[in-house]
Length: 79
Image (cartoon, rainbow, N blue to C red):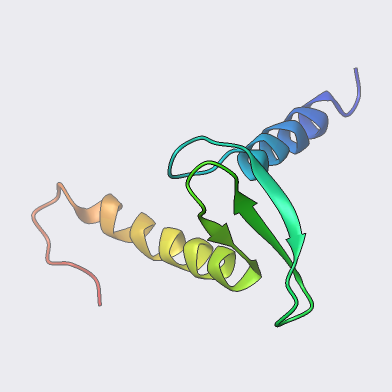
């Protein structure tokens, strides 16, 4: 059973890519003619996600974690 946790993580990550975060619709990969990179496009709502958007989301998530830690402690927010 070696590697099952890794396989489950990869499957969860793939499902996260395949499903739109706005409407849970199907995301399909498209080659952007402007930048020459692969973008994800939702066939239901039209939302587009590329590497820059994903990087900003990851950055925002890492900034919110410390704020959530101190949210109930009565301390002021971190800068």
